[in-house]
Length: 391
Ligand SMILES: NC(=O)c1ccc[n+]([C@@H]2O[C@H](COP(=O)([O-])OP(=O)(O)OC[C@H]3O[C@@H](n4cnc5c(N)ncnc54)[C@H](OP(=O)(O)O)[C@@H]3O)[C@@H](O)[C@H]2O)c1
Image 1 (spheres, rainbow, N blue to C red):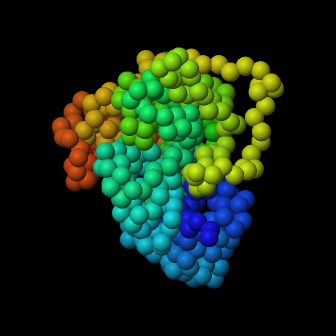
Image 2: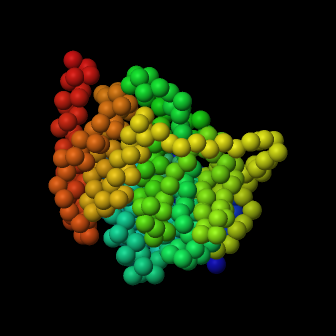
Image 3: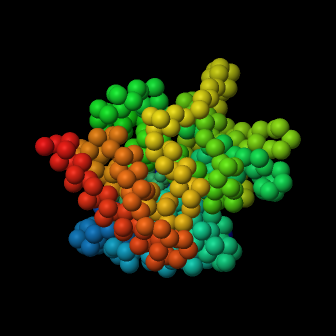
């Protein structure tokens, strides 16, 4: 029987790569539902190729366009209702959670409640509400299978070994992004176009900016804590510009296991969709002799303060990670819109963390309250920064 797949964010970078993996494995999967944001024409093309029963877009006007496009024979929904139906109402065995940012939390929780396995790319879901999401997944006996290449790497390196007794720590690697060697002074003047030029990965705009600021690696540290039930001291980062080693696990006997591959998201997507099997993946082979050398260095939290902010909320827990995430989302959008400078991103996140209320974060209401607070706080600070930067 083919596995039934629903994709939240099918028109994005992860969504499109997921559909490529599905197309490369005929007979193994059936696409039952797809959800996108605004790109309804791309979604119509996907519906033509994969024949899902249900599709959804953010805006009801675009839903009307989709219904009128004769190519789409699927039921068409829109907005939050559509996202929840794609996640929980289409009978998927696996829901690929590949929306970007906090938008993905409610549908991912709905998919868990419906008993679907989660193939998780949308790391912000675990950053905001790691405790809630992992508790609910455990209660419903639903696996959360990582799509992030670093976490897929950790999962393979750990291979189910007992964390408490045998594992000292895990290390996530980061390419260092386009500004790995840029001076602090020059970072103040970088443009969105420069920040969007990632040296190794081709990704959506928000995660590309997060990679440039190293916030992405900070979010991944928090994601790793929840996925692998590790303490803050057991999760670490190394800069590795070649992006060939995705993660390492260090054991108490002095051994380290590294997971390596070419940087191509189809590998970890295929692993999540096919779990526990490994199937052939149409990516280039890794040629270590041709590569010659692999390099590693410590991250510089002086220049990349976002990583330091993420580390501090990882230790603190409660609602602090939800505040960090929401403030970062607002700041990144403002940077992409040309309203603030690159270095205002860590400054705004830091200000939100300093001024935040306290809370344990063990209810969805509290998490969403923290998210709202941080968005309002950062938006109000943004007006000040904007008027200073562009008088
Ligand atoms: N890209 C990577 O290689 C990569 C690697 C590891 C982890 N991740 C994580 O995976 C997630 C997705 O990243 P991405 O690079 O694929 O992002 P992306 O290319 O920006 O795609 C985001 C997807 O979400 C959809 N979307 C946005 N807002 C929506 C809304 N309100 N309702 C319904 N759909 C909405 C977009 O639809 P439209 O385009 O139609 O508007 C698009 O399909 C992020 O959390 C990222 O950190 C990405």
